[in-house]
Length: 527
Image 1: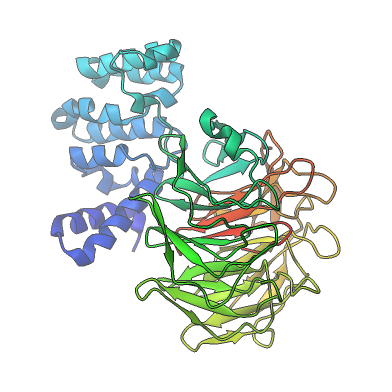
Image 2: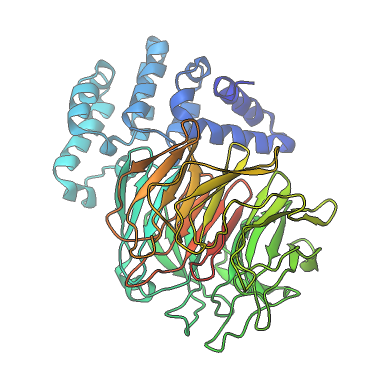
């Protein structure tokens, strides 16, 4: 089935039936329409939409378009399909177009002077007022009655967020427009937020949460901040029950979970865990894990949280366990074949892959995979080892392969490789243009993005992207500040920045698995 050609029909069918079993289809079809709007708007089904259906789609913050003019042109195409019946709909549809994001000349030439707009007084006034505000921005803050939504950016389905620790600067790179945007911090929160180190982050409900961390290695904290990607505002939220450093964080079924870590300068490790309920802004303890864990890695699979490895006050761990939120119980599973901390853990093809890390004595190039059906880890006998030992590396999945980039062995690496589960083989690809450890990596639009990190002597401002079709890396625009990185798309990465030393945070969220996890440079793992 060609979803581009049929997604609107599927959405309309599921929307009309009111059958609970079709609710998920309704959601997924609508999400597909918004995420692939530029292609969907060219299909025959698009022209058959009802006026309110189209208005609903155009009003979405997460409508994915390279330029806002695409939205406007789609409105004209829909109206011109049945001009006599639909001409009056311009007053309903034009306010859904973010006119304030368009070029003034384009608005004057193509919107203000369009025949459909000119013959509709309400729409013509809307465009005229928008042009006035673009010339006099203070009007937007006055009682002019102009809709602020016309000037609100669409929420991109992919963005790189660049956090610099010990700085008040955050920048965002939008792949669609190939540009960086400054994210404003709340002045009332700047002093508390800009000295954070070793924090964890997750993405939930169109918001980024910065969880825990501290003001240095000896001062863990329990504070939580939230950044709303729609309103572009920061807010300090209810604190965790306990201070946590080097914890594991993930998202499952609308809750944020924080597990393990340590709580004071004596590095007393936690086995406690807690979860955050956003609608009531409250953290509550859940059952404690079977093991104390620092620098463990977690993911979600089959509505359970799996946490693997880490270290406690006595040893590096090979144990792993899962949490069932329905029973509020942690259950130990078969131990991994190798003790690992700061490993990479990713749920992939119904298995959990553990990649690289350290066993406390050496960096690892081995990988293993857990099958929850048989409660078995497949180690180096069944899962091939990487071509290089890697710590402080980052990984992602693309085209049924696991890609891992950069990191350190006895040097900072610029190499990258992928694992093919069909052949059980790791294959080196063309090296990156820059050596990077503590970098951020994400797959998006069929490419692999590698951002920030350190080359062993200086912090990197650069970013590059890999095209698997041509096996080549190409540069993307530099960020304006030194930073590690994150990304937002089908995966979300947030990596701490650098000041006078290599800093050590990176986190990701994968909406496909509803998973988030922190990375640390000095105790790092692949994702």
